[in-house]
Amino acid sequence: MNVGVVRGGTTENVVAAEAQADIDVRVARHEDRERLEAALASLKPHLDGVRLALSGDWTRPPLEPSPGGDRLLAKAREHGRTLGLELEAESSGGGSDGNIVGAAGVPVLDGLGAQGGGAHAPDEHVLLDSIPLRAQLLSLLLRSPGV
Image 1 (cartoon, rainbow, N blue to C red):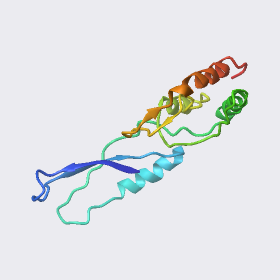
Image 2 (cartoon, helix red, strand yellow; image 1 turned 90 degrees about the vertical axis):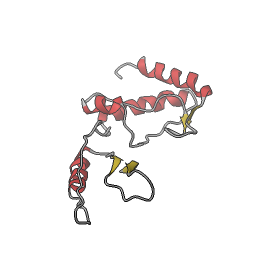
Image 3 (cartoon, helix red, strand yellow; image 1 turned 120 degrees about the vertical axis):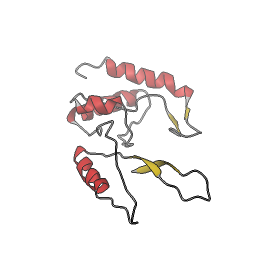
C-alpha cells in the first residue's frame, strides 16, 4: 500500500475541515485482496466527530505465476541466451494490461520491452541501445512453435 496523494484544508494555519488520501494497493495473489479489503474496512477514526469513508475499486487483478507463463519464460530464456541475454523472472507488483490477459488464463510475460529505469519518476528513461536486441527477442518468441 502506498498513500501517494494527500490533500485537504485551505491554508497552513487553519485546521482542515476535511482531508483526502489516495491509496494505491497492489497484491501478488488474488486471495490477498480479501485480507487487505478487510483491513481497510476495519479502519476507525480516533477522534470524536471524525468520519472516515472509503471508496474505490481494484483496476487490475494480480499477474500470478502460471504454467503457461513458466513455459513462455523458459522459451524467452532460451532465446535470450542465443542473444547474449540472461533473463530472470522478476515481480514488480505493477499493473498492466498483461494482468487482465493473465487473469483470463492466457500465458503472459510482461516487461519484455526496452531496458531502462526510474519508472514513474523524474529520472525515468529508456536505454535506446537495448531496443533492437529486445525487438529481436520478441520476434524469436513470436515465431516459436507452440508458444
